[in-house]
Amino acid sequence: MGLIRLLPRPGGSPPKPAPAAVPEPERVERLPERDVSEPAQERTPPVGDEAVTDDRPAEETSGATRAATRVIALANQKGGVAKTTTTLNLGVAFGEMGYRVLLVDLDPQGNLTMSQGLNPDAIERSMFDVLVHRVPISEVIEQREVDLAVASIDLAGAELALSALIGRERSLEKALAEVRGQYDFVLVDTPPSLGLLTINAFVAATGVIVPVQCEYLSLRGLVQLENTLAMVRENLNPHVAVEGIVPTMFDGRTLHSREAIEILEENFGDLVYRTRIRKTVRYAEAPVKGSSVLKYDPTGAAADAYRELAREVVAAKEAEDGAQARKHA
Ligand code: ADP
Ligand code: MG
Image (cartoon, rainbow, N blue to C red):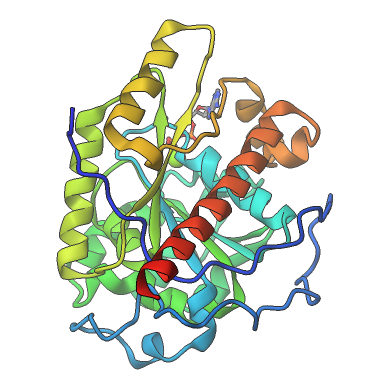
């Protein structure tokens, strides 16, 4: 159908892969044993290189450790496609692999915050204050299964408050500069819209992962998302691109689900991850307990699906970087 040209995966160095088997049932404090000086430095960091001409703060261009950090926006302007579920469980799966992970809740609904047992209505300072009042992001990070920068109900007013600010699209990028070097992965959960909060995520991101519900596949929605991303690439962050599409709520017994995957693969080729996130009530049960599915049901298939996705996201990037390196050699 050729709806969208296949996009190159974004550039940037992969984090050093953790040893294949690092069973870490409980979160390790700060993983001091992991060597973060190692990741290849031969490539320019995906964001923060000279190609960007506008209002980039100085600290954005200097951090050597930044080359290793992958900031991934989980986006789809449709609600209920498993953005939040994927942010949490993919993040926790990266954590299990030994990566240092920060989750950022950029959705005023605060579902990600809730899914780690926190009440967005009772939170005093949140990403709203970070984005609008320039409160350091470290002040709103809670240590849960992985680190989490929390949302509160205030965030609903952020789009309006931000719209009056100069550099309104770069608020998240600037906020992340403070902590970026401390993490291998920053996963940003976005609201179901392509407004200023999601744009902030795209501007700060090295890549975008799009969860897509196999049941109500909206290719038009994906075209809109790609158009917004193209605009961000042109004006604000030349390196951001869709790095993968995750089929969620897959039910292999239905023709409909299988057809949805076929259509996705016809249109987006290898951008579609091989991992299928199957439909199961486990994903709805876990947040009620304030935990990821990896903690709630560690040996279940639902947890394994996100572990598999995490390995695939790491491997896809390594393959892409290898191909890029060979091209430039
Ligand atoms: P979004 O953030 O895109 O709005 P959510 O992650 O909140 O979507 O998921 C929407 C609802 O679907 C939630 O109740 C969630 O628990 C449930 N859900 C997510 N993934 C699955 C899945 N693979 N199978 C069944 N239910 C799921
Ligand atoms: Mg959500």
